[in-house]
Length: 230
Image 1: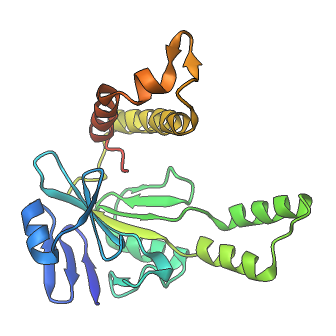
Image 2 (image 1 turned 60 degrees about the horizontal axis):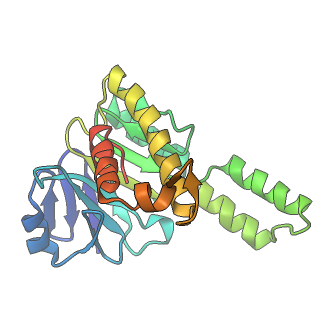
Image 3 (image 1 turned 90 degrees about the vertical axis):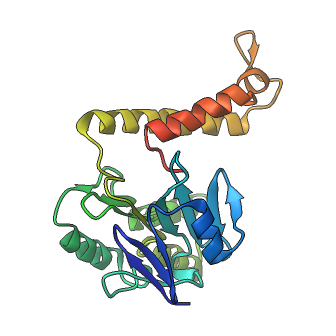
């Protein structure tokens, strides 16, 4: 299937067009019944994700398959999963012609003017550190393992596009997003590991807090207000 990404517009899947701002119903009428997780729609064995705003309008589309995925998209005439991270960055930057959010230190970039986001879970320096740690632990990576990890660190794993202003935060919101996102992720990680008999003071942490519907709703509100992407 041919997938063409059109920044600020949407995507084309062969002859099917899905436009940013359309409804959930339109997406379903084009692609059929989705797999739904945390209100996002997933298709093609979870290689495409669609996010919707509070009015159930499509606000973000993300290709998740990376270099090993069946779907290999095209944007500005290149495949962002097949070209090196540096080349993809340069081409996206040229078309962006404006601010680039680079606060994630090479793991991700958001091109503010064209509302494009790219992400990879590791960078080459991470692979070198992992290899050294494995060596010191007496379990060095094989040549094949090192090549696999290094290869994936040198290509983008996901690319997404949003509607106009999706990545355009003002200075006050940037500060809020950065801090709230760290707090949110840290607390979620804590909740994933605690058991029902773990207490915070005299309060059972998981049962009374993390497992409560009100708490889940609060996290959802934080995500939306601070524009935290799942």
